[in-house]
Image 1 (cartoon, helix red, strand yellow):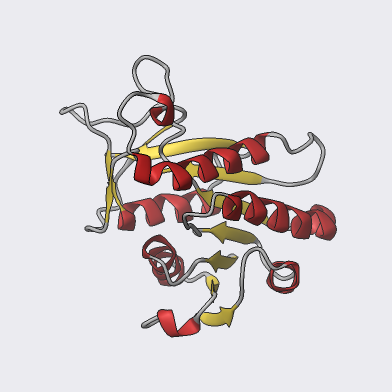
Image 2 (cartoon, rainbow, N blue to C red):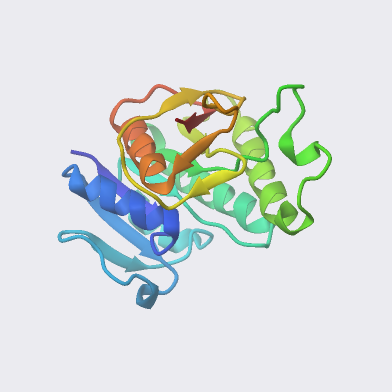
Length: 216
C-alpha cells in the first residue's frame, strides 16, 4: 500500500485517479481548491482543501506521502510551471525520503510521424495553446532538474486528441515520445484507463525521470 496525494482531485482525471488508487487499497489524500466540487469520494479517502502552488499546503501533505500526483490544469500557462516548482521544492526539502512526483501531462508535446511536436504542427487549435504550452513548459522544467537533485518524477502524456471519459478496461499499451496508435492510426485512451496506467506506474515504476504515454 502506498500513501498517494492527488492534486486536482475534483477534476475529470484527478477524481478517477483517486477512485482507482482507493480501489486498490492505497491510502489516498484528495486535494482540491474547493472541496464542494468533489461530489463524492470513495470511503477512506481523506479530502483536503488546498492549492498545488501553495508551498505550505504542498509541504504539509508531502511529508507523509509516497507519491504526489498532479492532475491540475487551466488556461494560465504559469500554473503548470508554478506547480512543478512548488512540488519539487517540497520534495527536495524532504531529502531522500521525499515522495515521487507523477504529473498528468499534455499530448501536444508528443511527436507526430514527421518528428514534429503536435503543438508546432499546422492546424493546432488556438484555443488549446495556453494549456498546451503550459504543459510543454512543465515537461521542460522536469527535464531541467539537476542530476542528483534527489527528485524522482514521471510525466504521463495522454493522446493528443482522443482523451475522454469512458470505460475502464485495464488494458493499454505504452510508448515514449510518439502516440500509441491503434489499427486506424489514431491514439485513444479513456480517463479511466489513463488513471489505471498512472496507478500502475506508482506500483511498478518503469519510467523514472522521463515522459511516457499510453493508448490502446
